[in-house]
Length: 193
Image (spheres, rainbow, N blue to C red):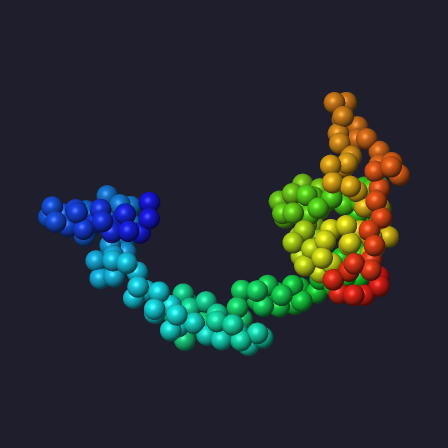
C-alpha cells in the first residue's frame, strides 16, 4: 500500500471521528507516523528536509544520505562508503587469490561464486566464513569471478558446467573440456596478474 493510500485511509478514518491511536492501530503504524501523514500528506516537507540534511561526499562530492537528521549526514555517499569499507577490510587482489588457492587445496577444485555469495553459505563449507570475501567484493576487485580465478592460476568454469552431485553423493570431476581460459588483458585495472 502506497503512502498516498495510507494517507487517504487515515483522513477518511479521521473524518469518521477516529482517534490517532485508533487510526495508527488500524493501519499498523505509529501515532507519530499518522501525525506526520496529517501534517505532510504528500511527503514533500520530509523530502525537502532530508535534502537539506544531506552532506557532501568527501571522496567524490556527490550528496550523502540525509535521513539520519540534521548534522548527522555520513561523510561518504553509499558508493564511496562501500569502496572505503572494502579497502579498510584489506581485500587486496593478492589476499583474495591466496584464499582461492587455499580453497582449491582444501576442496580440490576452484571455488564457485555461489559458494562465496553469503556468509551463511560460506559457513556451511568452512569453519571461519569471515576469512573469505563475498562474491560481490571479488567482482569489485577483479571485475568478474573468472578473472579472479584466472589471476590465481586456477581453472575457470563455463557457466552451467559446474560439477554436480550425483544421486550417489559423489561429485563429477572437472574435465579440461569444461575449463576455459580468461584473458587477463581484459582486467579492468589494466594490470597483468
